[in-house]
Image (cartoon, rainbow, N blue to C red):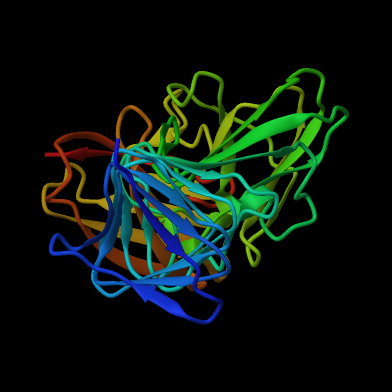
Length: 366
């Protein structure tokens, strides 16, 4: 059987730039591309299609220009890659070096990004250049349970770290980018999972990082860690040990077994047991009024605050899901707002403000 061998012996600093009529750097099903040295492969306005064998060596791929795809019948393994444009995966992708976020987006869709090398990691991920998109894809790295605790964002910079544990073992760390539906409403656009080889009696302390753009309107001062033991079908809230809204992380502790986690709003803020009023909600520091009630088009909201503060106005449906949040700034004394509600489904809604002790108001949307 004939095979095509392409030996890339380019020295560091030189470039191999390739494009085909189909808009991809293509490796055929009987081709074998081998990189030696540290060549730079510049893919401007083209993707990468691997149907054969690609040996990356210590090469670096540069994606730039128009959105690109990484596809093919064979899962590709890169050393370094610079993501200067949106890059969508049509197959799994392996990194032995660095995934550099350089202004572009990594869109795994339903595929997995494996960080495999000893120094393999995400670098420079930020609000404007990150892993995101739709689908159930995720990034994963296998590392010692306590490795990465002192790093900026855990093993592989995936955004989750075990800071303390009474047991040590290897674990697979995963991070996805889909929102989860918790009893408190939608989570941030990020989930985390830790799968240790030995998953008992850990008494672990965990830290979860997030990006501002992933909050989806949630108040980061209220973020709660939610845990799922069934892969994301059901969720339970956990007590917060510490948080830092400047560095964007939340910590929990006393985790004897590790599972899947996400960040969402607090539990139990919908007073289904009777802690609500039909028109006026009042505490010593605040009163909340919504009128008219029933309402069809525009809700008038009046808040008398005992002190100036920032808050979030929340609309929850009868199941407890938060379906609308509006940041508000309160001055001492009377504050008047109006909120269009014509797009909300008809039925019972609960309106509340995230201030201590404040009850919700039951509002009928016609």
